[in-house]
Length: 220
Image (cartoon, rainbow, N blue to C red; front, side):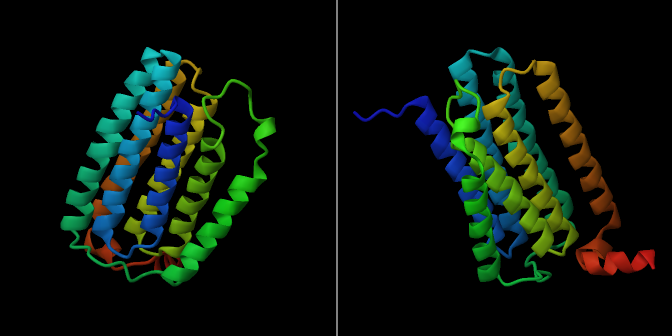
């Protein structure tokens, strides 16, 4: 029977998170945006649980459960109900570049993130080193989603992907930080997401048909 070490499993989970980011970047359907983000968050919770098992840290176990419940289930359900269904969003047509161009740019950013970080400069004793450049790639791709998508809801999903990338890097590099710091950052980010969701749902159909370029005209 073939068994995988914890480090290899963490590498595979990180690759899956990156691939789901590419899937979101290559899609035009709002339903898939939310579905890919939900699956990505569930995989992220599994990565946190793996680190928690490796370190024997109860606080990371709690963080894994919170990530699964809030980011993997709660936020996607709220986003689907209040943004996708209520606003009747189906296909994202407000994209500044073609899908192929976006994927090529994403591949370049991934290569840059991977080669820009020298593994020898990372702290010793890490469970795995690959998740660090991969997490940076997820952050860059999430930012790319926010740039090429001009619909406000799609940009929100890009911001949530950036958050997942930050979390992946954080649990790899600073998993020994006190739980209060991890939980505080987590809850602050979740609060920001909920505020943005409330703001977007309150604007209703106006934001469903408005892109970022039109919003900038309000300042003139």
